[in-house]
Image 1: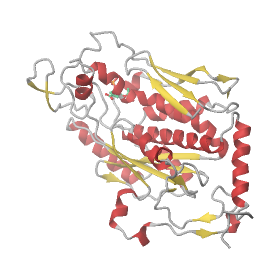
Image 2: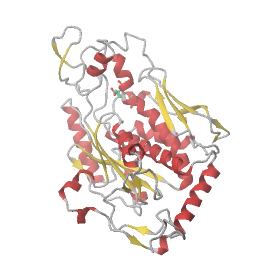
Image 3: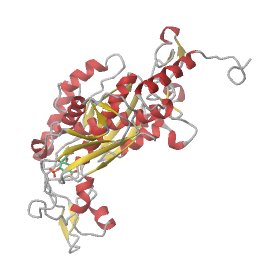
Image 4: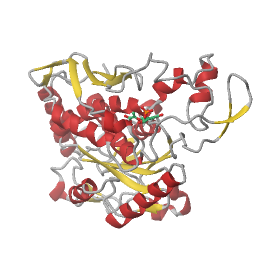
Amino acid sequence: MRLQYHTAGESHGPGVIATIQGLPARIPVDADFINAELARRQGGYGRGGRQRIEHDTIEILSGVRKGRSIGSPITLIVRNNDSRLDDDARTPPLHRPRPGHADLAGSVKWLTTDCRETLERASARETAGRVAAGALSRCFLRELNIEVFGFVRSIHAARTNIQVTEHNWKQIREARDASDVYCPDEAASELMRAAIRQAKIDKDTVGGLIEAHIFGVPIGLGSCMDWRDKLDARLAYAAMSIQAIKGVEIGMGMSVTERFGSQVHDPIHFDPNTINTPRLGYQRPSNNAGGLEGGMSNGMPIVVRAAMKPISTLLRGLPSVNLNTHQPEDSQYERSDVCAVSAASVVLENVVAFEIAAAALEKFGGDSLNETKRNYEAFLDAARALPLEGPGTTIA
Ligand code: EPS
């Protein structure tokens, strides 16, 4: 079974559920780590009143015994404190769709004039389930020494140009954790907070850029043989599926178009002293490819960037139409966030982690952790043994 997960649950229903299938047995499930990721997702300067009500933690309903996976489907539930889905007084119908939200398309699609039928599921509350699933997959990835780091690159016009590498990222993570906008650059963080404050005063909202770096990924995850197996495509799918994301880049991304090939492609060197790393000695002085060539990991850190639009619920409303009367009216206000870019950076970090875990399991397989690890080591040994004797392996 390919590693996969589903989420279920409405924003104001009893809770958000994630069901994860395909994880090998014997993986230590670190609930404290998963809960810490959930707490980070709830944070970030610019969020609304809901996060003071919720205290997201997982309850494990299946698939784990004595702190380890047993190979069966794992079900995690994050219960909602603000559960009131059937209470019309506290959760009234919404007839004036918010431009940018799922309200209009969903209401027409499911043949209703009450946008609540759609918005409860389209809500970013669902990302609690995705973070829970992604953080669980990281309990497996850490066994392969694969780590993930995400942060906020920009909010509105405020941006940091900080360069993240495999050597400095742990220090940068400390700086990120000291920032309430999850940006490791204090001067940029101050400008980001100012942009969010101003948007709030203006009854407006702001978006931004989020970035995830994945370290320790061996060469050869993903495949160029079938388009569905391309790892860059799967990472982009995962990132684009996060609520409010409008663009995704890998490595140098869109700016490759402004440069010559000689300025884009990362030269290849061989350093025998690093043959015992997942990079197998193949060193690249730059990483414009963002760790992906031909839809496969190339041993360099994987870099995924995503653009989040400003939240579509504006306190001042936007021109819209009442679905019951077809008369022009401003969009309806629902309690919301002014900016959720920081939270989205945590979501990105965890959804891309899940795709790496899935690709690693496709390559190495195994029903239990030790089997997977053995397969992984055997692959590295075989790659280090190249060139092999025999047809097809060398050209005389
Ligand atoms: C959201 C609206 C707000 C956000 C919510 C996403 O919810 P509420 O209407 O309950 O205040 O807080 O995000 C979350 C609840 C969350 O946990 O991230 C929306 O319309 O998408």
